[in-house]
Image (cartoon, rainbow, N blue to C red; front, side):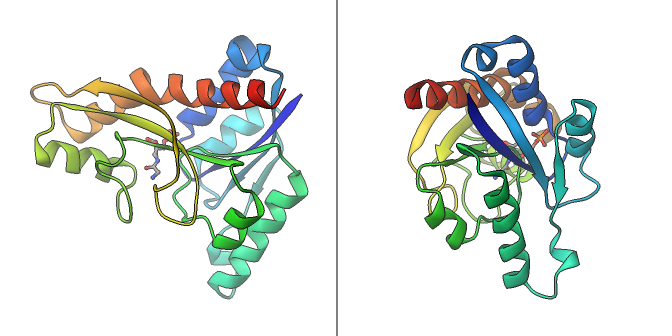
Length: 199
Ligand code: GAR
């Protein structure tokens, strides 16, 4: 078996794609299971998705700690307690502290909603990525799964998938297409590859 801890901040459609793939897809065959879901946001719908599937959850919000350092220590403890084989950032909008990156070399992956190195790095997250892609007028965008290193979206690339930008797209429409055609396929596939590699 290959255990993963999934970090989330919002709607959790990528978490859902992992849950569905464990129930019914390639993650089932790869022996993957979710040990814990951790959110920095107690309102995240991703937490409901986890609870609906009997998965342990934990909320580590910066609002509950006196300073950033205390938040980062609590986040690291929550991850360490779950002792996962792999940490998956599935729409986690907090920059991972260096202490965590150093403790888990090549054991943290992130999904980003563009073809890195376009539209990535500081300030590029969620809908902002798609707003920037449309403002630049690119005709193709996509998603990337990469290992997390000390930088922001700078780690080695594992998988990428391109998605067409269509005439009249709004950021919301483009975001939905990138999720459906790329992210929700790519993220479970990357986890399966890493689980099989370890086996
Ligand atoms: C996804 O599009 C993910 O790629 C993005 O946030 C969204 C979360 O959606 N992540 C980033 O922008 C990270 N820089 P979800 O909560 O429905 O999975």
